[in-house]
Amino acid sequence: MASIEMRMPKMGESVMEGTILSWLKKVGDPIDEDESVLEVATDKVDTEIPSIHSGILKEILAQEGDIIQVGKPIAIIELLTEGDEPLTIRTSVTPEPKEQKNVVDVDQAMGLKSPDTILTYPKKNRFYSPLVRNIAKQEQIDLSELENIAGSGKEDRLTKQDILNYLSSRNSQSDSVDGILESPKNHTPLTISGEDEIITMDRMRKIIASRMIESKSISAHVTSFVEVDMSPIVSWRNKFKEKFKATSGQSLTFTPIIIEAVVKAIKDHPMINIQVQGDQIIKKSRINIGVAVALPSGNLIVPVIKNAELLDIKSLVIAVNDLAHRARINALIPDELDGGTFTVSNVGSFGNVMGTPIIMQPQVAIMAIGAIQKKPAVIETTEGDFIGIRHKMFLSHSYDHRVIDGSLGGGFVRRVADYLEKFDINRFI
Image (cartoon, rainbow, N blue to C red; front, side):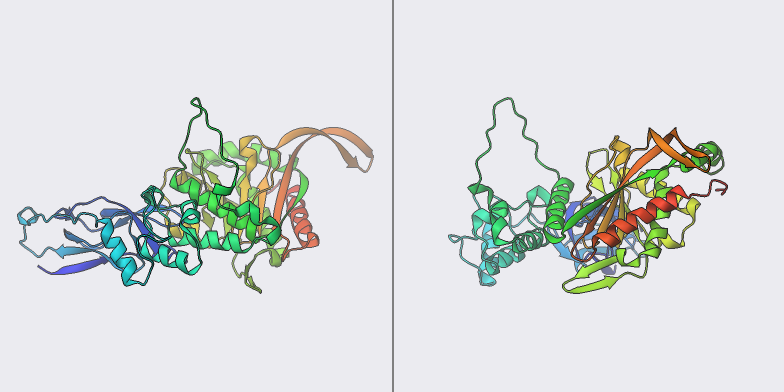
C-alpha cells in the first residue's frame, strides 16, 4: 500500500504555524476523507484538521504541544487500495514524549547555553522550545523574566509569537514607563488569603491579554464620542423585524444597520481604512469589518466580514448573524478571523452606554456601539423647538493618533452618526 504525508495546512493569510493541541486519532486507526484527525491552535482560533485522503494513520510525526510550520509533515497516512482490509493493519505504538535531556541536547547542538545557565529548564518545570530559547538568548532575556511572560500554548507553553509580542511591548516603552513592564518579581507581592480563589487563565484569555497590552503599547489611543438620534431606525426596525424573521428566519438587529453606516463613512474617509508598517501607511483597497462577539466563556473573539462594501443590508444581517452564531459554538475557521481593516464592538449588548475600545492591531481604529436609551431631547421644527422622547445612542470611536488626527477621527464618527440619523425609513429589506 502507498503512503502519503499529511502536512500542516495553511489556516489563514497570515497564519504561518500552528500548535498541535490533541490527536483525535491513534496510530492504526482508519481515517475517512474529510474526517477530523487532530486539533490545532493558532494565535487566532482552535480548529480541527481533516484528512484529504482515506486510509490508515500509519505514523504520527508531531506530538501534542509541538509548534509546526505550515507545510511541514505531521503524520503518515497509508492509503488503502482496492481489497485492503483496514482491520488487518497492525497498530504501531505512538512514540512517547522525549525526555528532558533531549531538549538540552538540542540546545547544545544549536549553540545555546548549558543546563546550568540562565536558559535551563526552570524550577516550574515549564517547557521552552529551542526556538524560544534562542530568541531569549539573542534578546538577553534571563530565566526569571522568561518565566513571567504569559504563554498561550498548551500547559502555559511559551510560543514564538508570545515572546515576540512581549519584546514588541517592552521595546516600545519609553524610559519613563519602564517600571510598568518590569518583571513581576520587582512588584509588591500579592496578598492571598485562604478564602481567595485562584483562577488560571485559559489559552484564549492569555492571548487576549497579550494582544491588548501590545495594542496599547503600539498605538496612541484617542477616543471621540458622538450621541446619535436612533429614533428613525428604531421605528423602521420595529416595522420590519417580525416580517423579516418570518420570511428569512433571521433576526434583524441594530448591528448590521450600524455597520452599513460605518462602511459608508469609510468610503467618505478612506484614511480610516489604513494600517501602519514602520514608517509606511498602507491604504487598504477593501473594507473588512471585524465584529466583536462575546463568547459563553466570557472571552471575546472578532470574526471578520470580508468586502463589506459590496454587501447590502440584508447580506450584512445574514453575515453578522452567521459569524456570531458560529463564533459562540467554536465553528469559525482561522481565515474568518483574519484581514480586518476596521472593528465594531457592541458594548450596548451589556447595557453599557459608551466605552473606550482598544484597537485591533494592525488596524488604526475601532468603534463601540452603546445601548439605545429613551431620553428627553430638544426637537427643532419650523414651528419652533419642543421637548420630546427620542431613542439616543453613543458611538465611541478610538483611533491611533500616530496617523489619525482629531479632525479625521472625530469627523469620521460624526459622519457615521449623520448616516444613521438620515436613515431612509421608507426603504425595504
